[in-house]
Image: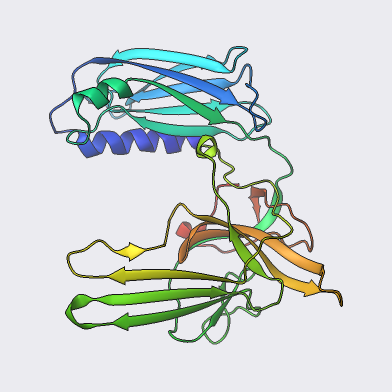
Length: 319
């Protein structure tokens, strides 16, 4: 799966620039350092550096990419170099018991890089983080690309049912409330505000950052959700004016951890709650819900999705 992702990167790079002035044969060198979550080098990890073959072979049965394979040394380092016409590289690190890590690197994009930048990009170093596979579990997981079905009123979404609550869907429990407000003005100006609320005391959401070295890992999130730090509201804004870039705090690379269906004891402590995570930002995101009360584990097993009858674009493969 990860090799497919990386090869798609190479294919997109080739397709986006092929047909323009081709880059002549050039030598590139990639040095990859593979580390574990404690920062220590991972010895003997399998590394693949893939490069596109240009021009593409006329026979569709022939591979359109080349590959240099090896293993990391005692310092967790593997180096590869080659002379070719490739625009970009894909790097994959794998080791038994770890989640695969992969990342793309652009060697050259016409009109975007001058010769100095191109030369620098041909000799680069990359750190890849291998996160250990812990205890992947069945979860309710679904990818959404939707909008709030009604404006100026809170509409509940049921994470277990994967749908809006009645009368907008078949959901029965409002785990998250979405309220959209649209203000359209003259001359094409508009403001849209999306307010994300949680109906129960103790429920909430918090953003988490993906460290730079972790951006290529299959597992983007922590293995577990925290027990505190949740806020009950999140506000997303989108301001549009003709001829100007959209002003928004929406970030497709944003990620969240959440707590829902919280029950508190008479002292205000959490007695029971469900935890989960979100990859992406509202309203185009993938969510994961752990169905076991008080279990902080958010490490999803893609082979055990509790959400059934998903459409093709609703499936979730990332752990």
